[in-house]
Length: 229
Image 1 (cartoon, rainbow, N blue to C red):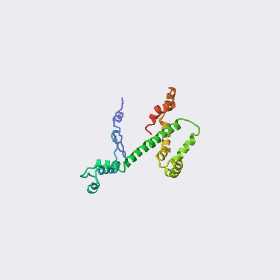
Image 2 (image 1 turned 60 degrees about the horizontal axis):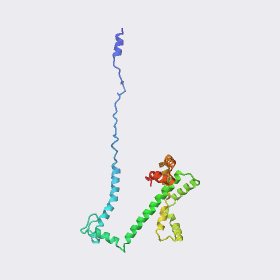
Image 3 (image 1 turned 45 degrees about the vertical axis):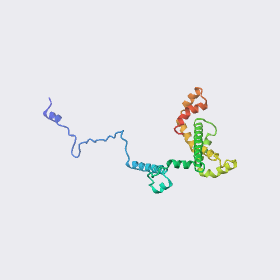
Image 4 (image 1 turned 180 degrees about the horizontal axis):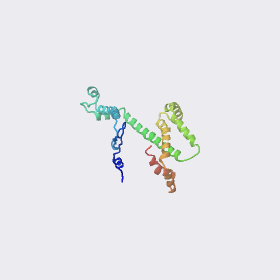
């Protein structure tokens, strides 16, 4: 049998807090919903200002292209004039000096297609070859490419002009197209991207299936290099 003292001591409640101690409090943790992204008011305002700064000149250009010379002076710059002369302005532009603006536009398209397109193709081919093939002098080519990236284009303007002058290519489209075909930074970018973007196993599988190097590049490597080009 247990004594009354023992029973009383066992039935007594246990005190969890004493003098100088406070009872533990439950802290409420705020759970952020992963579906709700955080919005930055400052970033939104800055982005809006950049959009306005970019779009307003285009709107001004489109509106004022519909005006005559008198309408430009008499009307507001951000609203249309009474005389709508858009088609007359387009006709006058493309017939000015026997269509010199048309020739300039076609020249620009030719330089963009041949220059930028050719530079992209050469950078893709060179970057793929440097990333996936081992050959003597690869380190020297890497050092040359890095050095060419560090040289500004303005420093090569006079030597390029003198070289093209001796070759008889000045005052021809090739004087613009040929220098634009060389892009050291584009070559370096494609080299780095092709190193990680193209698995060697895919190339080996294509070669085992009987594909040549050209077919392997255009059917396997080129689609993987498209995001960087």
